[in-house]
Length: 175
Image (cartoon, rainbow, N blue to C red):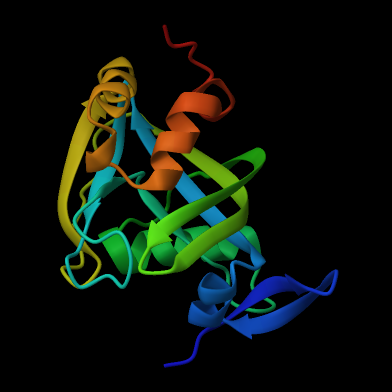
């Protein structure tokens, strides 16, 4: 299935096929969601069938909005598709731009809209096995330490978020 995502081509936002955007390293729109319960973050380990970064740990969910889809609608859609999560209050935490090699000649050059949700209790999570092979709730400080000490276990974007933008995402300052 050809999924058309918003990407900048010659300075103009245009619909482009997702894999093509990654092959060409085009700057494109994305969303990332972090679900928190107290001091823990819900992480997912990407399914081995993913076309890039399979088996690596990532934030709660991330994806690309469809052409003409709002960022918040995209975040809600993907939380449901990947983890069967619904009815979360999403807070927009702003934009982050990054560029990272994700292997196999593919580049993620993203303008990412960051969303967070703070849950008063652990939500019921049902991972979609085509997308997610495992989930884990991890303490924020422990996650920051693991990213520094074992970076190869994590997606490039989660490493960037944790090392450069964590205060923006969580409001927590790490050591």
